[in-house]
Image (cartoon, rainbow, N blue to C red):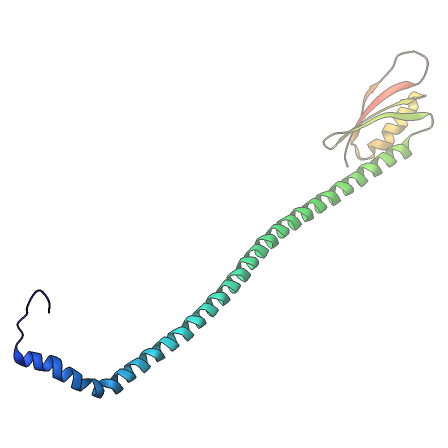
Length: 178
């Protein structure tokens, strides 16, 4: 007996001692049912936990795929930007080639227009203008060259070395693009 002596009512003592022992065999099927239900709940919870773990693994796989697709999307955007830059550079290069062909054709035209005993010493290209320097054996050769270049009214004689020294005379012509 404990240090404290509780006084219990005799009816209460009867219910506690006699009824509990007598009710235990009658409650065994109830307890078995509750135990079976708890085992069933534990089994269902275990199965669901495994399904949740499998779904978590699937989510991780899909998350990795989405991340890879996002990285691929970023790489695609970079590649498109680089492709646009390369296309612009190609168009610019084509324009430069076309302009250089025009310049080369202009030089060929100037070279073909040179009269005998006339040669070029310098050709400079500015913003839409040409500066042509050269030497000629006679003054009428400079006039012939100027006439050929000035077919569209775009060439003018800038200077002619009119000194009486021996040798070819030097000239400078300015011409605009046509």
